[in-house]
Amino acid sequence: MKQRTPVVVNILIIIGLLIVFYYLFVQSYSFLASPYFWGTVVIGAILAYIHSAIGDLIENNKFKKLTAEEKAAYLSEKKIPFLRRMYDSAFKKQSATEEKDILIDHGFDGIMELDNQLPKWWIGLFYFGTAFCIVYIAAYSFTDFAHPLSEYEKEYKEQMASIADYEKSQPPVTIETAKYSADNIAEGKELFKTNCSSCHKEDGSGGIGPNLTDNFWINQPEKTLFKNVFHMDWNGSPTNPAMRPFGKNGEVSGAEIEKIAAYVYHINQEQPPVTPAQGGAAPQGTEAHWEKE
Image (cartoon, rainbow, N blue to C red; front, side, top):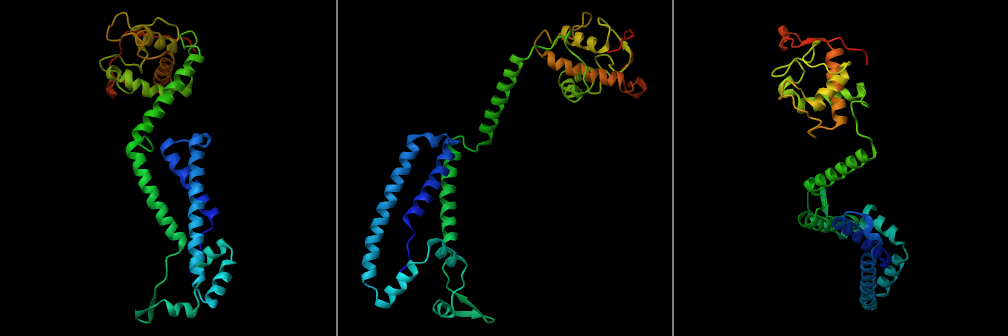
C-alpha cells in the first residue's frame, strides 16, 4: 500500500496553482487583495481536507486487510518524512530484490529492462504542464494576456500618456529658449528624414529644396545659423510656399524643431559641404555671415 501525500502539501499546491491561474487572467497580483481569490483558496482547502478524510477511510480499510508483516513495513515507511520519501522515489536506486521484482523478461546485449515507475516529481510536472497549457491557451484566446498586439497597444498608450504629462510640466521650446546641443543631432537626423528629406535629401544636399550644407541661404531672418533654421522651420518661407510653417501648423513641436535645427547646424558647420560635383544642389541665395552660437 502506497503512502499518501500530506494534506498540507496538497493545499500548498492548490494555492500555487490558483496564483498562477489568477495571474494569467488578471495579469497582475492585485487579486491577492481580492476576497474572491481567498474565497477560492478556502474552498480549495476544504475540498482538500474532504479528499484527505475520504483517503483516510480507504487507507484504514486497506490497512486492516494487510498481513502483520505488511502492516509493519507500511508503518515503518510511514515514519519516513514526506520530502525524504519523495527524494528516495526520484533518485534512490532500488535493491537487487526490488530489481528482480520489476525485471522485464527480455533484454538485448546484456542490457535488461526494468519496469520502473516514473518519478512522482516528473508526473507532477507533466500534469502541471498540461493544465498550465490548457489555461494559458484559454487566457491567450479569450483575454489580452500575452497577446503581442494588445501589449504593444497598452505600452504605446502608456508612453504617449507619459510624454503628454512631461510636455505639460515642461515649458514649450521657442526660438528664444532653443539651444544647440550635440546630443540632439541623432534624433534630429531621424526627424529631418521624416519631415525634410523629400525636398532637401536625407543628407541635406538639396533637391527640390536648396542645399543646406553650403553657406548660401535664400532667407536669413536671424543672425545665427541655428536660430535661422528654427525660424524657417517654425514660420516657413515667405518666398516659397513649399517650405510651409511646420511649427505654426502643429506638424512638429518646438522641441522637435530644436533637434532638426541641431542636425542642420551639424551638417552645415561641422561637416564639409556637398558640392554640385558630389551630387549637391547648386548654391542659392546670398552668402551668409553667421554670428557664433
